[in-house]
Image (cartoon, rainbow, N blue to C red):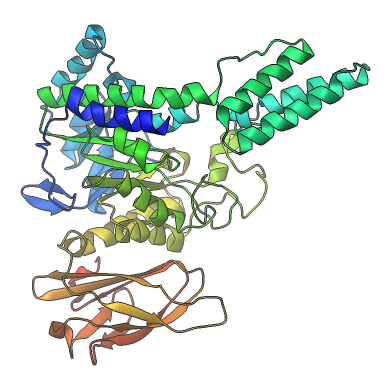
Length: 497
């Protein structure tokens, strides 16, 4: 299967073809506006107590550093967004997935493109949200779990209940069926999909029962992946032929393999995913990630998304809600628990954004704010962060420094043995900015070493504090809290006012 998939992946590039990108992105993946690289700060929704596209809140976004707002295929909304100096994006959904010879689908897609491609607020088109995850995991709940994420019974539990009923009725094959079910589940847990599917089918047959979803099998989902990749590439090629001047962006789930992502990202300019891990250890898991319950999964999955779209812009969607805000649809099953599922606080919100940026994100967007109030602490924190990031933007979008400073951390009462905080050093004109992000869960004391000679003897202000450090012998000493970010600069002009 893997060899066949690789063949299809390579063949797609040759058969379907991917045109050269003509959108305005620099080599580091930042969008160029008026010829200058910009950090994209975007918002999916206004707060839940706002009127649709409320002018005061759109202006509030613009005043606090945001430059992108979801508009949709709605001219009035796009006009209103443009009036506040914001750019917009339009989701195309599955319309961008074109099958070979689908003339009607092509016509429908191009109708939307031609209608909105010249709107002055438009910055990007977006593909179908998390489509690859839904294709790959379309039937995983039924196939693998006793209780699915929606609360519905999965195949293992349905069969177990049927077997229990057969045993209670004294049917002699109940024990045999129980053994076969255990084998089917074991094969599934070992990712032996075909063997597991065959064994599940045998259990249904032995019980004399009809499988209500005989086509909900993992092998068919996996076989569908190269088909959807071809549809993606064909659709984006069609869009580019009619509009080469905007960003093509695909948002994924944080749960796909780089090989599959690369196939689906061939036709886009920007790709990333949504990731919502706050609060730390909340129990909201993101499958397959290292430290799935930690805030640091933001940085980890940013690396995955960049590997899945090499050389392209990386747009990350972060958490603008608490899991309890989702109500019955929340992955947190204890709605009265005061801790699990709460909204991110200021430090968590700030850390997640800096963690994404340190790992190479070119854009930070927020989803879920339609669930929170416009006077809520989280909404105010997101706005505050937007202003802070916009102030330090010149450093974030600056070219990578040739100097490679290093960190030597001090052992402490934890198992910490070095590696944090991680550093980003940038030169902006005559100034320097150093961003330190501590992915360790506790505070760390550290020495920065090997700073460039141009910084020797200079003061570094730790922004948003009264502290400053003087560079001596190529470095300085400081400490940082767990899951925190600190910004040092030779000038306080990088502080938001």
